[in-house]
Image (tube, rainbow, N blue to C red; front, side, top):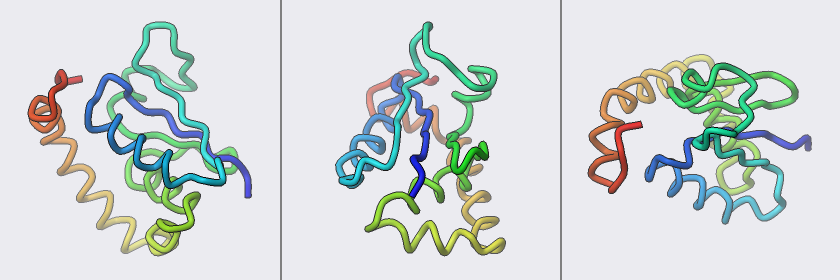
Amino acid sequence: MARLIIWFDGACPLCRREIALVRRLDRARRIDFIDVSGPDSVCPIDRDALLARFHACEDGVMLSGAAAFAAMWRAVPILRPLGLAARSGLVLAVLEWAYRRFLRWRPVLQRLAGGGAG
């Protein structure tokens, strides 16, 4: 299985918690996690766009939002069934809808989790 690249906002307490969990679950080390919160971080696309949504690169294809989460899930054996289910257009559409709703609440949730609104 090819390595997956995940870009995440290390300044976001929600992101840090989720990435920490996935790192623990990724026992085969199939995922490369890249924190793009620092000013010197290397971003494959516009940094603001990268911080606005979750991004991954799977098999050379850039993914964002629910598709990026699904790719991350597929790379971790215990989460793989969720990622495979998201290959269905309908399931992915529902996940993307939910992700967009989450993004509206992300700043509030970040503040509640002890971080900024970034």
